[in-house]
Amino acid sequence: MTKVMLLPMSRRRSRRPQGWRLVARVLGEVLVTLGCVVLLFVEYQLWWTNVEADRAAAAVTTQLEQQWDLDDGTPGQRAEFPPDLRNGQGFALLSIPRLGDRWQAPVVQGVTLDDLAKGVGHYPDSALPGEVGNFAVAGHRATNGEPFAYLDRIRAGDFVVVETRTTYYTYRMDDWYLVPPTQVEVVAPVPNKPDATPRSRFITLTTCNPRWASYERLIVHGVLVDSTPKSEGPPPALT
Image 1: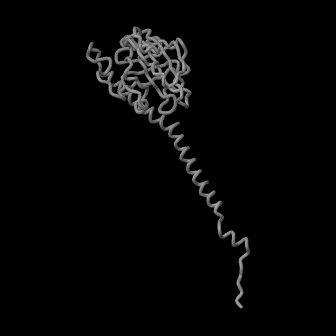
Image 2: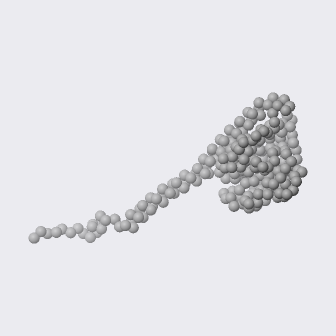
Image 3: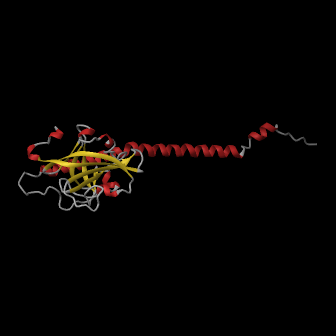
């Protein structure tokens, strides 16, 4: 009679991996992969978008200053602002001394994501710097250059200076507060009074709040207190 050799029970089981172990192994590999993807995305948002936005803002600033340098001072040779502003086109420089002696950002036309990745965006339907009405701008508070990361540090009495081709416009900031994103009347010609006729020259800075979320808007208002021709040098707020 032929004898049949049987393997020990423990050895036979080791050759057939149990189903739950295989599932756990695959699930673990998937989770590790997803974790790596999430970390790469976070790094892209927190670091690389700032690198790209800083480069874009520097390019807009350089181009703007080069255009201004072409003006030889002949009266009426060049308009203060381009006649037909295009989205993403720079036309002014914004300085906020409260945020640092060297803090400066280009102001570009438009408030789309592409526009705001180049600097501070001007609401197209709002006034231009120095005009009667409300010169309203928006900026990122986190990622994409985050020019308004610390906008909440502004206090009443602080100055904001807008430099154009011909003029320094100095605004004194009066108030800041939080509103829901739907409260669009903050950028009306007379802030929060959409039916009023403007007689003063306002500025409004808007950004998300809190810094890493977007369910509120941080609003800062100011009023024009000085207009200095660039031929006379920077205003006191910048010196």
